[in-house]
Length: 396
Ligand code: ADP
Image (cartoon, rainbow, N blue to C red):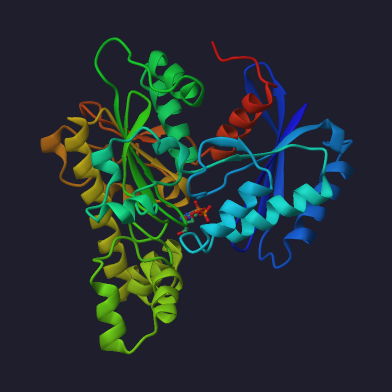
């Protein structure tokens, strides 16, 4: 049997097809299209490609289609994505306007095209279900909390993969097993010293997560994916007084303000150059002060969250970089890790390479490991979906 994982970006449709054998899904093929305006056409194209290249003979070969859904309000975890899930995505689209509408649309299209194939949603918020109340709450009246205004956290599948893989790379199979079975068994105590990992997912959107013994205990992301670090186009953390202030001083409407915070802020707003770090770095190297400012604010914010979680965890055994920016930019990793030898973290410039693979770039005498782990969110989605379907042998 096979699982298709559908990744619906605001302008892209990407997929990965996995075979279900043993206790881990195995990647068979991947594909998709950019600059998508019609998800129905993109999904039809993908299904045709998969059948023409022989990977998917018939829809009946599919045990299910997995989705890395973002925010469902009260719905989280790994669930069968029936029409109530589509509705929950639409109901919370105000908080995730770039993410929820494409997923609601994609779920509807798969429901209509492949009615017999189960759809499974693994919410990005699932990894944060065990964070403490102190980490979850904003200092707002109780009625706000009851209305769902609290920290949810995102990029859960990516940070969960980091929790699993970093434990393996650090020789802690006991913690890796807890992390892999987390959504089945919940957090489990392990013997010995706690494993403390700070995971930096730096990409089109970015977040930092603190992980203790395979379980997230804190996240830079809050109520919406607009929070935490500056994102490519989205603002990141902002004083709540800024919104009424901008409305009054700049004469903006609430809708204009929201649009500017979601589409014209973040690295794009700071740099005035681009939302892509490659363009921003090139401009900064050519002397553009706005581009350099965007880089400086981004690095400052990453370090701010690393510092907070270092204290919260009582130390850090591994600092991990993942996703497009984290995996491909040694200069950025160097800037994030600068001046930390007093905390026992030192990188080796020779090991801090561009290799698109797992690397440990810590110096030999660094107490903290510094790892690059290529993102593998789809594997986590495929595995959890297969478990919900009962199509995977239990992980021992
Ligand atoms: P998404 O969140 O859309 O999947 P990615 O994880 O691919 O995005 O991250 C996109 C960011 O990663 C961009 O800012 C881009 O500059 C950076 N990036 C991606 N690939 C590379 C690369 N080969 N070299 C440098 N930067 C890269």
